[in-house]
View 1 (cartoon, rainbow, N blue to C red):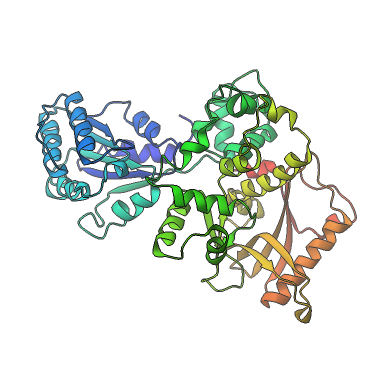
View 2: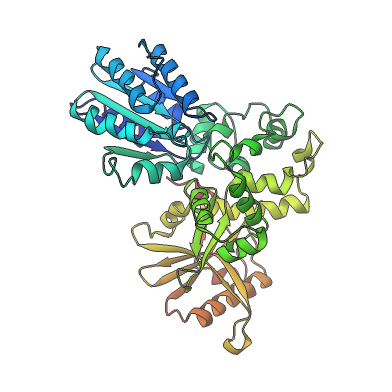
Length: 472
């Protein structure tokens, strides 16, 4: 298995001591949660079950009882609620002769149906029975990250503070993707890995579709645009598989997809027609917890003025190039070097940089310094001397320095032009005049191959390259 060493250690250590463990594993869809758990225990479980993506209480319990039977148990066909169904699970554990009884319940959130008693039963199973033993490893897993956070991890009832471990499984970094392609024997340069990452992000499932003998554009056409492309309809299921009723989620995402820098809550409402309600807050939190959007605060602004920005690589690629259902099976290959793709690459590279802040800080030598990550937008205000500008990435440091980051995708060393130099100076002055900051401003260039040495390069304090983004 590529990467995941820390997560594997947590899972495997749970079977080496003389105590029972209750472990929650969560993360966005396709990130490899189920695969991780199965690999950690060599696909051997005392009991394993996966909730139904759709189905009421009766259907969920029926399928649970089928898993009881598959584990060698004798299910009671009269079980009508989860408290009763978990009694059959206890019988499975009692009958097992294994030193550690490993119980794996996947997609737990799908099992939590209306008017069901799932969490009550889970609480009773762990608090009233399993935790009193020394030989149980209970692992629950779900792609609905926000559900896991509110219902299990931050549960305010009987499950409060009952987890022994929790694993938030995140997408691969560029470095981990490089390890993965090498392990599969794929000969790809770092720029080619970046090209694929800008479309699919670090979601391992999507990297499984890469095949030898094809260029990145050919692979993308085969995976997304061919008549029988395996991920041609991926967007249809991306949100529906995570949220039971994804209509509002999709409306929010579609709305945010129209503005690169993101929108405030009020802007989302005015541009989408959604109602200002507590339900909107829940949906925004759910999208954020699953990594589809991010919430940030403009530097110097009050916390109430949060901005929500769509950051999921595949969703943004879909809106840019797939939403109109192109019929050309070689669509992506034929788009190389077009203005649309060149513009998209610049924006996609910015997102990749935002996903690798730790690597950027490492290159800047500030890994141990507390920082806030902000964006900033200043409207034109001639009275205050503000010309109007937008800064996509500010690294605000505790040592009273701000790295003002310019992110530029280029196929060669980036040449800083007179216009670039003027833009950086304008942004610096706007930021100082608008916020009154006394921090030192360090112009920082993040680009693929560094910057060319010319008359304007000397104004750049720090340079971060693609190789630095592959840092560990």
